[in-house]
Length: 113
Length: 117
Image (tube, rainbow over all chains, first blue to last red; front, side, top):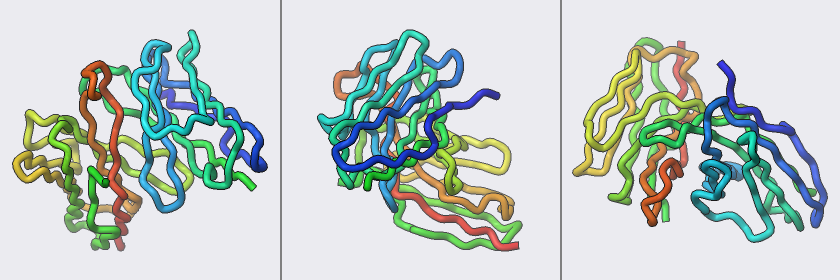
């Protein structure tokens, strides 16, 4: 079965650079979520989109922005990168219905040097 | 403020025995609970879920129990297999404050399960 696809798998950037992470949800899933997992931490919710509109917002820095496109894929844009942004970034998708579980991609490991 | 807590960082179990992973939560607005399994270099994999209207949900070797009054849930794996060795995350969700969005999850810190042959 098709899963959530994230690209790239690994990304190395320098401080103050920008990065764009992409997420392709499971077909027919209309809701996308972004999570950040720091070393030794649990995943922290950043932002979600339902039908191309932002549906919820968590602890996402103002330097980050995201959007969901007409084909339901989503991109997380990160600017003025800081060392502390180094983390695993997971995207998840769901059908958005009550009790619909989130299915996660394998993540993008961002390293900021 | 950790709203979802997994107080055991690790658990070691013999193959064939039962594994019991525990999770506590503090936010009474949570009404949907999930367990995820995570291997290194992979995303969390959904295992099983339970809504607050139930106290038990079973799927093969996995059973989740929910005690709403105690704000506690547990995942039972029986019999445990070496392939079950992974990090297990408990997650909780509910409607957002505006009642317009469902699905944002709050995760616990994870428990490393090791199943010995």
